[in-house]
Image (cartoon, rainbow, N blue to C red; front, side, top):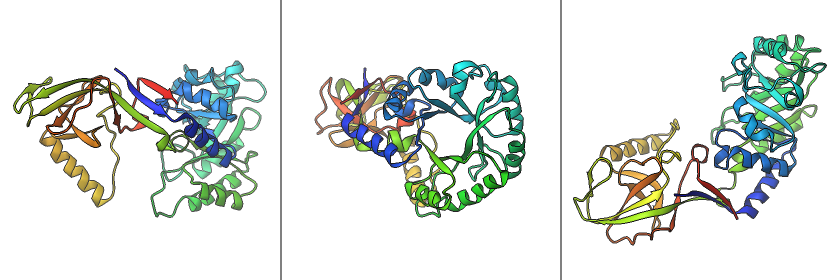
Length: 357
């Protein structure tokens, strides 16, 4: 029962190459479900791109990437003592891993546990930004800089910035202030690992801070940046004509009118019908959320599946591996075995197959 990601291979590869060629030092991010492609696939693609470093989200994702990519492996989740069982801390594997550190006590613990003589563990020091998720204060960065000599290799400073708002001021001002703190810490490194900076912002910062090397970490903009090269389609598994009042489904619902039930691949196990909160801020988007809530209450929930050029309603909540759609009379149903487009959130969807054209 395939839910398939179809990829226009030539177009997608051209996009990947354009991103990496345009931004020197790009670090592909390979985390979670691998942006719908799978982490192993993206690791092989990163090897093809010729980058020297990729980033994973957390330590238990290293194994799926390390055997398929030969370069350095940055872990974005900051080191904590409870990561020790999952983290390579010695030998050849340990030398490839770059740990993110956001607290001085964590650095001390990492150094104590690591068995890499001479250079010590490789680390990126994360500085607290307006995101306020992880990181050192300016004072903490100065303190940690004084304690790293001889027992750790500092690969740079990380800045994880929030997403920029359309029409907002951007991040250049904040990065300027943070880099002043980096200079005050008197670190030997001049590498700045950044997230969520636009090409224009990067160009501005490179011009203002020529002594620093900026390394953009990118996931969505790289792997999903050309959505026209990607399409998810679901196989039609069954089609049933129904009259008004016909009961169907797990909960014995009644058809609201004459039409067809269309059973398609894709369910909750794939991530279909499961939505993360988006925190929409505009009045228009909040009004749309209220409207959707009213449809939900009436049992009329719009699905992400498109049939005959229109997004169709779920006949009932998605099943684990399949979904039932209601198609009103007058619309010609697809045939069993046909594929229909599905709008998905790639980072929350696990497809059955990736077909690279």
